[in-house]
Structure formats: C-alpha cells, structure tokens
Length: 130
Image (cartoon, rainbow, N blue to C red; front, side, top):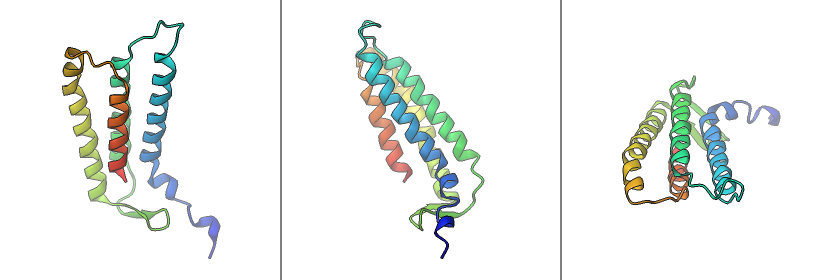
C-alpha cells in the first residue's frame, strides 16, 4: 500500500469546509482584536461581522455549486461527498443567509451588539457540514 497517495484528493473534496473554517477563524480574530482596540475607541462591529458572515456563506455556497465531484469518498472513508449532501449544504447556506438578513432588523431594534452571535451561528452551520 502506497501511503503517499492515501490522502491525495481529500483536500479538494473538503475545500469548501476548509475555506469556511478559515473564514470563521478570521472573523473571530477580527472581532476579538477590533472590538477591544483602544485606538478605534472600542467600536461596535455587529453590522460588519454580519455582512462578512453573509459574504463568507455566499462564497461557500459558490464553492459547493462549483464542486467537480459527483460521488467521492475521502479522508479514509469517513467523509462522503455525493449529490444529496452537496445540495443539502447549499440549502443550509442559503437558509442561513436568509435568516441572517431577516434577523438583522431584530438585532438592531433590540440593540444586541454581540458579534459572538454570528460566530456561534457560523460554527453551528460548520458542524452541519460534516
């Protein structure tokens, strides 16, 4: 058995999930460093995190739509990528974008200025992808 070819195409199969996890980590770092910045006078970044979350979900949806695989098994037969799972992931991302857009007015009306709300939502969506 050639162990060098064991994980050859696995990165390409999970590319949308890897991209989404990197986006979530960047949003966490942006929120943590920017809201505690004395230079910027401790700004509220609820709106910018919302639109960055929507943008990252949009790009993840585009990655799912342009996936070249019809049926693929990866990561040593623990990750199955097929037509049904791909379409369900697209539905989940579109529904999340819609819920973020609908909930935007509620968060503004009740003055909920916690960027962690969006991070938790993105992490739960990321959990649904696996």
